[in-house]
Image 1 (tube, rainbow, N blue to C red):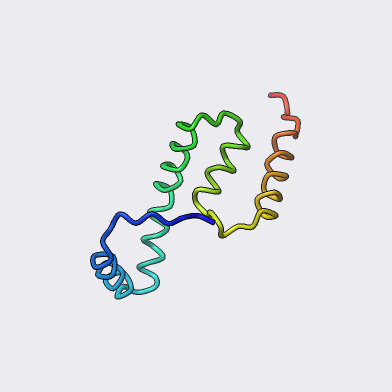
Image 2 (spheres, rainbow, N blue to C red):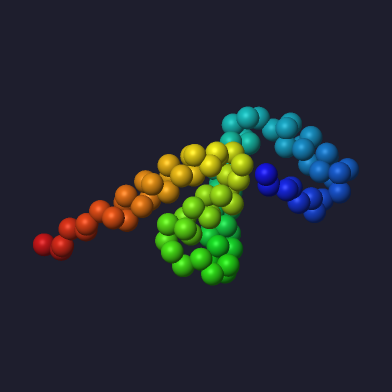
Length: 95
């Protein structure tokens, strides 16, 4: 299980949550969609800096950083199988 890290006081976190929840659901969805590419780039940078060089391992590490315990070990294994299958496909030579 992932251990949460808190860098904001509970009082401020509560105030921020109230402000966020006061926004419409569509506003919150748009905010999340706009933040996702940045979150993915930060996770990928962390994985690169950790020394992971294998492409499949790196992609799975980014996935784990973004989704953590939301995916089961079986789901991670299924994703690895798909990534490995894509890597094993022969590429077409340029015409």
